[in-house]
Image (cartoon, rainbow, N blue to C red):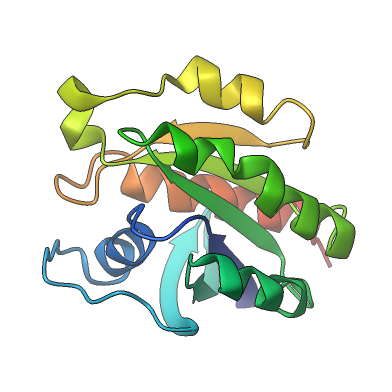
Length: 171
């Protein structure tokens, strides 16, 4: 039986959300992706432990005014990935703002935090330990660092959130 899940991707503007989603969906990197306006929905099919899964990936724009839409996008969501940029401490500092909205509207939603742009590790200004510290109050399921450019940890991230959703929403 095929399982279908709604997965929300959220975080500040220009942290790499859309690039990450496109890498996951197509397997390719593009540095010419335009900024998301509002929200985009993508579909990813995969098989995990012999279970066919369809992910409906909701990529929410990161500008502050679009946070007002997040409560509505939480409705019916099965999982979430918060993305920050490892070269931008403010993008992680806003984790609490985003997670407060998510937890108010979907208190049991499994969420993973992912630091994007791992290929810029030499320019990193945020450690994964700092991310774990920021996320301590929000029941974060896991933490990753990923690179859409190289593909490092992208499949692992989406496999991890899919496993969490399969475990959380067993029928």
